[in-house]
Length: 165
Image (cartoon, rainbow, N blue to C red):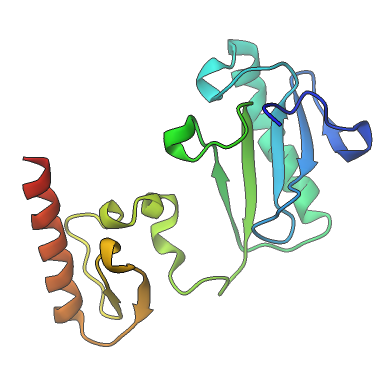
């Protein structure tokens, strides 16, 4: 499927002038919804001014729909714009992903961690995490040694800066 123009009407749980809301068929969490443009356009940057004006209202509506059935503790609102950003369906859609306390070990970096080796701000220090380098299967694990973690982050930043220069 290259776009969302052929979604069966029974899947649409809300319709505005410019957008449809549907449940994600492969949800990241309970209540995960998609806001989809009713006319074909590829990304957020292709929306017209009326659609952009309507989108915040539809996002709030999606939140209310989620909260009719679930009690999330937070939300991620995301748009993948282009293949390099992870867009797999070439039709504008916005993910409304409910987040729940303890649904992952360390959510505080949020969408900033979409590129793991660059996710940490240069002044970031934590007392309870260690990280393995991304190209060695990088992932976060609970740990105790803040100095080890901070040194690993400093080394990663220095190596990244060297690669960029």
